[in-house]
Length: 456
Image (tube, rainbow, N blue to C red; front, side, top):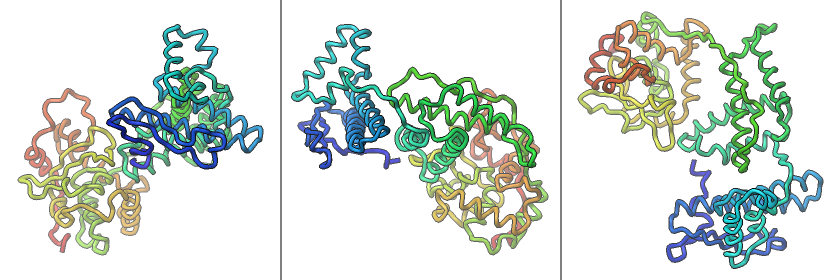
C-alpha cells in the first residue's frame, strides 16, 4: 500500500522543524500568486508533519481542481468548481486543527474564545491568503456536491478506505476492490450513476425492493440471491455513502439505507470428499504425475493440513519448519498480507503425505506467491480432467471440509479442531490448543495412508 503514501514529499526540515513546501503548477501561477507555497507545520514530529502535510496537499489539489473547472466555464463545471473550492476549505481547516464551518455558523454558534482563536491563526500567518481565510473563517461558497457514485468510489478506493487495504497484498487489494466494485456497479445499473446527494430514502427504498425481488425463486431457473449476499451489496453502498461524507467533514448526514437488512440463514451445501475417495483417487500413485511439482505438493498439503489454499500458496521460507523436532508450517500474517481472521494464525504439524510433499518445496512456492486465483483455477482444471470431483458442489476447498470432518469423526477435541482450522473458539479457552507434539499425536490418529510410489 505504499503507493497511497506521499512519503516525505512536500516536506522540508528546517532546523528540526517541519515545513510544507510545494510549487504552484505552472499553469495556475497566473491565478494562484503564491508560486512557492511554504507553510510552517509547527512540529518536530515527522508523523504529525505528514498528517498536516496530507491535509494541506489535499486542500491545494482541490483548489487547483477548482481553478481548472472554472476555466471550462460550463454550468456543471462551475458547480463542480465551487464544490472543489469548498472541499479545499474543509481540508485546509482540518490541517489547521479546526472543523470547517460557514461564516454564519461561526458567528451564531461558536463562543468568542474559538472565534478569537481562528482570527489569531489567520493573523499569525505572515501573508494570510484568501484560501486560509476561507478555511478558518468560513468564507468558501456553498455548493451542491455533484460527485457521482462512480467518482466517489474511485476516491473511496484511492484514499478513503486506505486503512482497509493497508496490510493487503496486491492480489488481496485487487480482490477487495473487485468485490466492492460489483456492489457499486449493481447500484449504478439499477439507479444510474447519480450524485451521492441524490440518493434519497426513496431511491434507497426502491433499490432495496429490487434486491428483495431478486431473492425470490426465479422463473428462468437461476439461483435467487441469498440474504447474506444482498446484505453485503447494500452494506457496501451504505459504507461508500457514509464514509464519503465523513471524509468530506460532514458527519451529520442521514443514512438513506438505514435499517435495510434481510434476516434469514442461507442454506449452503458443504461438500467434502469421503475418506475412500481421497485415498483411492486423489492419493492414487501417478494421478498427478504430469502436473507441475508445486501444484502436486499444494494438493497433498491441503489434504493433511486443512489449511486454506491461500494460506498454503503464500507460505514463506521462515514459515516452513522442516528441521524442527516437530516439522510444521506456520500460518501468520505479513506486513503486506493479512489473514482472513485473527484466529487464522496457527502452527500445523506436518503428518502423513504432507511431510514428504513439503520436503520437495522446502522454500515454499515462489512461482505462485500471491497468485491464489491462478492456483485455484489450475487445480480445478486438473481435478475436472481427472474426474476427481464427485458432484458439481465439490471444489478444491472441499479438501478443507474433508479434513474438518475427519477430525470430528476421529473425536479430536473441539478446541484443538478450532486451533488447527484457524476458527474462533466460542468456548472458554484453556491454553493454546495443545503443544506441537500433542497436535501431531492427535493428527496421526486420522492421517491417510499413502504409497511411497506417490513421489517416485
